[in-house]
Amino acid sequence: MKARHLSTSFATIYALGLLDQVRVIRRGPDGFWGPWAATGSNAKRLVQAGPVTAVIGVDDRVAIYDQLPGRARHTWDFQASDLSAAGLSRGGSVLLASAGGRVWGTERDSALAPWTRWVPLGGPVDGLVVAATPKGALTVCARVDGEVHCLSRPERSATWSAWESLGSPGGGAEDLALVVMSRGGMAVFAIGRDGAVHHRWQDRPGSPWNEWVSLGGLARSLSVTRTASGGLALFITGHAGRVGTRYQSRPFGRWTPWFDLHGDARAVFAQQSYTEGLEAFVLGTDDEVRHAWCARLGTPWTEWQLLEREFAGLRLDSPQERALPAG
Image (cartoon, rainbow, N blue to C red; front, side, top):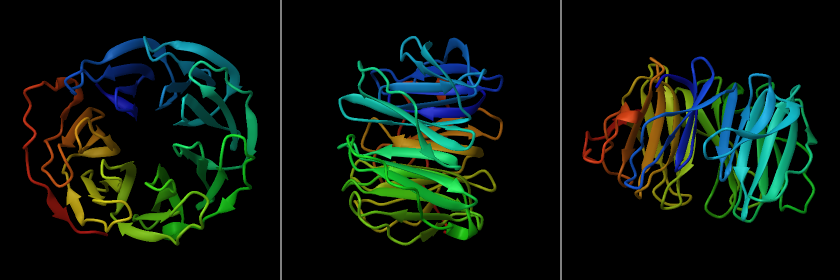
């Protein structure tokens, strides 16, 4: 399957093909991924979070997909250029869109509730990411001329804060990722113009942001996820296409050295696996979608393989990780 973009979750992965066709692949009860299936539709952008899957169609309008069979069930008369989504408790969801460089938002309280009307949240910004805590606090991060700007809401009934500048890591941010930490605080990661990954975080919801700290890496793309033990794991693709990772074995713990996962990729997407480990998906330089994982933190990773070619007899004790110098 050749693709130009992925949106991953535990149970489903959506891909935008080279001709904008939307395809989906689902995880079986054995934990392995099945074959790609066509949805019969096309889109320019796709995101999923919790129970919601949303797209920007070829006409630039935002639409919500049914999980099965993966076709649009509701389309707004609202055009956007970027999307980000987060799942809320009780099956609720929040959907943010960038239109004309400004941020707009809509949400629903549960999977069966109606969506609110779109409301403006300010801007202009670029590179939109959003994350939600289990208690419903929301944080949005985006770029403004290389600066990272942040918008937050402590709970569903509260009003949004004003946009706050978090500075320009590494001479200016070029890519962003946002993740919820174990105590409910947020961590934002950015690839700076120096090529390194920088991060800044809150210890708890609403607490002051710590200063930017560099994690090195010489990255072209990044992805961040929580580990089963509550720490964070960072994945990057380097300038030579190799995939690197480093992680915390516990919440707020020390970061491991960089580990080289090899590969030949232009983008990486990571999440917790169906075991206690991690899994990563990449778009190769040949546009193919590949997959690798580890059974637990600190154990060997599998070789990269085409996602649709997994089978239940695959061994989990493929090659050893090798250290990759930071920076």
